[in-house]
Length: 338
Ligand code: SF4
Image (cartoon, rainbow, N blue to C red; front, side):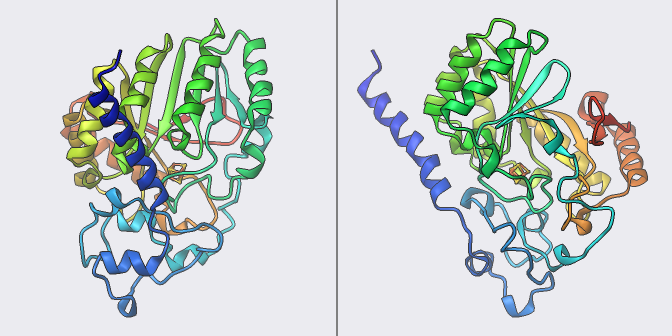
């Protein structure tokens, strides 16, 4: 039986991440006030909030340098006026995911694995995100629709891995995750549960005792692919969250997006790899930004990405150099560029 004191700590912690999630910064004015930035001298302008709201969790905002319009964390969340720039190369469904929607909430793009959108929302809105135009309303299954997705997985024994994605799957409640994991565990041909999430980085309190208990008890091998783009995102609290995950045997990987003005230089990328490794996480992919409408100011050319990863290789051991990749619609896996 669980110690009552421990139960109390557990419920406190479990509530804390939900409180943080319910108290996101959504007002640009409030964000600027916290960061001691004067709106009248804003060099970034403001655009695109109607289409994709501002959402920033306070633990993430606490890592942004004050009085710095060009802070690499701020640039990831600020609705820059350059979002208005149109480009023929950029589209609202750059990966043509609507083509792979096998059932509500189920994307079957790659052989052997499927992607389930476990939660319709994120804890943070990353302005470069390829899902900023995704139709979450049509891809938020209720239990009945989950059944349909689960039945499809059950009927296809070539599927061995389920990737929980979103939104952010860890924005879902523990109750929903417990139900879903139980259902997936009961499918014999599944061996691996992969969770693509930005939550351990942006709200590390999400790695709460109930969630850890859930992940520790499943028979599925658990791989958590975090999303962090800059060493400044990794503080002590994030380190604590990763340590707890590692302690229960979760494999920890990271994927980043190569973003102009945020991390498009070799020093920033090497520092990120070093900081991840110091927290027990291996760099996995470095993605070129998807060709999403509204993100022209984040785009980095393929040749520059290749040159940066080559420069990383000259400085770092191979296991700290992420694979440079880009998603090409219709390809049966990510396209590796280096
Ligand atoms: S957390 Fe992930 S899915 Fe959500 S906005 Fe950021 S990059 Fe996109």
